[in-house]
Structures are given as C-alpha cells and as structure tokens.
Image (cartoon, rainbow, N blue to C red; front, top):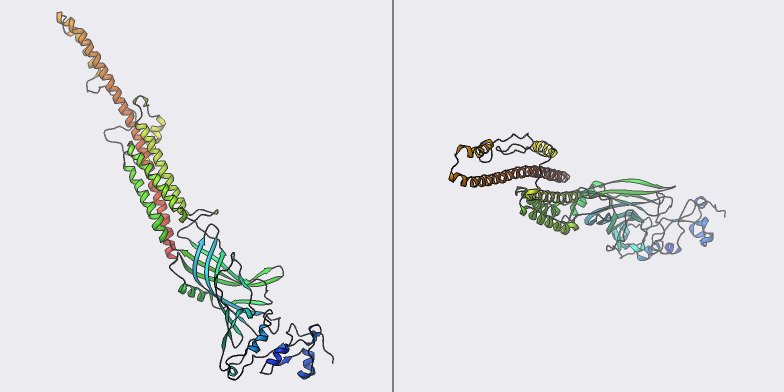
Length: 511
C-alpha cells in the first residue's frame, strides 16, 4: 500500500483509548491519499509514533453519553483531558479564538510615588475547545457542565503592565457548553504600572492602560477579540464599582491592535481606564484649615505695624502653619516628576507669612530705634517708595501732613507761634528799654539765666519736632511697604483661590 509522506497539515494522532471508549462511533480521517483509496478503518494498523507520520488522523468525534446518565461520561472526557498540554484545535494551522471582557469592581489604591495602580477586576474569558462537543439530545438534555480548569488547555493571556503577583482567590472551575465553548470567570487583583499625573491634585483625573495579550502564542495560534463592546464594559463597571472609595470611574475606552516584534505578531487589546479622585476629603482636611490660617494672617495686617504684639502674633501663626503642614504631609502625593499645585500653594503661603514677619520686624526696628540714630529718609526712598509705590497702591497721606517727597517750606515761626526774630530782638532790647537801677543790676543775671533756659527749652522742642518729623516719614515708609505687601498677599491668595475653583469646576464637568 503506497502512502503519501505529505500530510494534510498538523493533525492529531488517533488515540486508541478514545476509539474504544467512544459510544457514538467515532470517524477517523486519514490523510488525503488514504481517503482516495477508500479503505476500511479496521484494515489499517496504528503504528508507533516514529512511523506514524503518514498515518496521522484527526478525531472528529462527539463525547459519549449513557442511558440514565446526565451529561457526557467521564471516560469519554478523560481522553481529552490527557491532551491538556496541546492546543485544542483539529487543524493546528487555524488559530484558537479567545474572547475576553472585564468589569472593574474596585480601585484598591493609587501609589503616586511608585506610579502603581491597584485594581480588582472580574475577568471573563471565552475560547473554543473543539474536542469537547456532545449532543444534548443524547445526554438527557444537558447542554452545559462545569469542569476543573487544571484539566483543560487555557490561553496564556496576561496584562502587560502587571508588576506584582496576583494574590486574588483562584477560581478552579470553568463552564463548558455542548458546542465546546468554554467560559472562565475569575477574579484578578491587578497591580499595574501607570503614568500618574498629580499636578492637579486633588482634582486630578488619571488615565491608566490595561493591555491584554498572549505571552507566547502569536496570531497564528491565538487571536484575541473583545467579548463585549467597550461601552458595555464601561457601563457594567460603573454599575458594580464600589463608589464608597476615593476614586470614581469616568469611562473605559479600548481598541484592538497587533503588536509586532521582529517577525512575530501578537494580538492585543488595549483598555484605557479613566478614573477621577473624590476631592472632598482633601478639601476638608487641607484646603479649609489652610484657608482659615491664611485669613487670620491677612487680618493681622490691620494691627499697627509698630506694635510688638504683631510680630509675636505672626511668629505664632507661622509655627502653627508649619505644624499643620507636617501633620498633613502624608496626604500630599510626592513624586520625582512633579509637585502638585496644592503643595505649591502651601509653600507660597508659608513664604508670604515669613516675608510679612520680616517686614514687621523691619518696621518695628525702624519705629522703635534710638532717637539719636534717626536719619533723614534718603531721596531715592522718598521717590520710589513714598511717591511711585504710594501712588500705585493709592496711599493717602493725612490732610495736615505734607507728603515727604514734596519740597519742604521754611517755617519762620517757632513751636509757640512767635517769630524767632521777635524773641531775639526782645532779648537784645531788654537792657535798653528799661533803665538801669539798683534792682535792675541785680535782676540782669537772672534775666540772662531765664533767657538761657528758654533757649534750651526751644532747642529741645526743636529737636523733638525734628525727631517727630523723621519718625513720621519713616512711619509712612513702613505704612506704604506694609500696604504694598498686603495688596500682593491678597492678589496671590486670590489667584490661587481662582485656580483651585476653576480646577474644581473642570472636575465637576467631567462627571
């Protein structure tokens, strides 16, 4: 008997146990040359595997059933279980079609420092087993049974972003349909790498990628397609996702593509899971306490700048704000790639507090300095601070005080309103206006002593007046700088508040 050495393709060798145990008269198909000879099945002898290449056969049989026994018999399935290490395809040139879908049940954690997302998925996987087929009418109407997954071949589908072991509870059984369709439902605790953007924390929206694909089998062996539409997966996940946590699901998007690496190609399904953070926890624990402290610091500007209590008050406030930041440091995410805008906001607020304290110290030092050490306000300080900055911030001098940057007018009168010439003239004319007498000669030294005392009083009053004018000028310089810092403080705080409100509005619109 001449047998062609060219087989039809990769086929399975007939199992004698399967032939003897099948109750539904299995049909073994030989290669094309033996089919042409149309020889009976029992006339051919099954040889060893070394000489079995010309005699490879494909088993196209159904599982057997017994009367009074629901479902296929164990003996008929055991022969298939023995082949669990091989892909269940009659023709190995045809790929096995696998369908998968998942439901996002919970977001267990997001680690911004290590860029890791931990989720819990309900994964459903379908594939076709061409050797596990039976007729429900012959098996007492049984159309679906459960089998242990360890006895079956399973497609090696993994998540490419997986970075840790799966510690979820294993599901040891699968459902098998009478057509050979297998459904495997399992729980998956997925620890995956994700590029987390934390700049808009706590109003951030994260977009993480789940890429499902076979680790070993190329598209020649396994093809992967979605079992449901991406919209259906998203709706199911929104329905079952535990909403009591910190994160909320926005949408699940996806696409199918082919991964090329050298000459090999793999089927992959890429899912984009979009989640957003619930910010209320951070608003209550971070923003509101910080806003209260900043409000108190703003109100401290209404204290007199030369008051010592103002400096001590600001020092106490800075100490309290520092303790607040240390306590709330664990709530702020930190990465080497960037800093959240909320952290920048806290740093700017602390810097403004320190600057306001330094400004208070400088003003206090100027206003409470020794009287003899007061100096004239430099001309550039008058022009820059009192004139330009004062006009910029709309600083108004009192009506009875002339602005220091204007040219000073000479004051011919002394502090008592009497012209200086009159006092000198009176003192000089005193001896001539009153004739000399015996009592006048004795009173002249007394009058001279009185005039000397009056001159000392006049010089002291003049010194006090000049000191008061210098102190008033430096005080106005301090007031202008204090008001300037207050306006800058309000401007920066308002800008940051508007940015946070806008980010919150954008977060609400994405709901």
